[in-house]
Figure 1 (cartoon, one colour):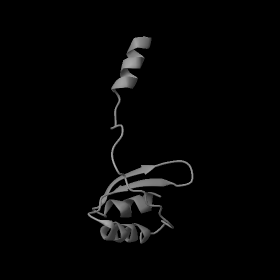
Figure 2 (cartoon, one colour; figure 1 turned 180 degrees about the vertical axis):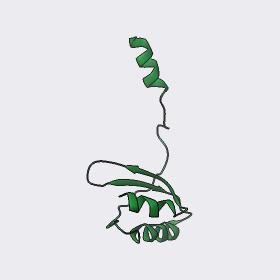
Figure 3 (cartoon, helix red, strand yellow; figure 1 turned 90 degrees about the horizontal axis):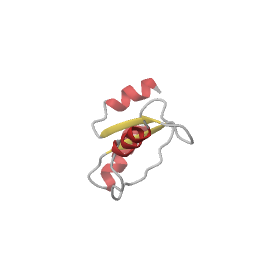
Figure 4 (cartoon, helix red, strand yellow; figure 1 turned 90 degrees about the vertical axis):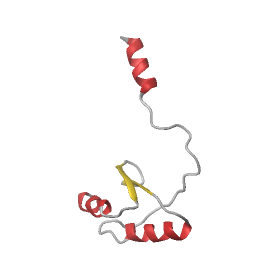
Length: 79
C-alpha cells in the first residue's frame, strides 16, 4: 500500500487517506465539484497501481465533527 499511497498523494483531489481494517484497506477522502468530476477522480484512483476497485459514498452532511474534548474530560474525571 505504501506505493499506492505515494501515487494517491499526487492526486490533488485526494484530501485524506486512512488505513483501515475490514472489507477495504484504505479510506480515501476526495473532493469533486459534481458527479462527472467524481467519476473522473474515481478513475484517477483506479489507475493507481495496487488499487483494484473502489466503492463511492457521498457525504451529505456532517453529523459529529472530529473531537477529543469529551474523551479528555472523561479521562480527567477518572483521575
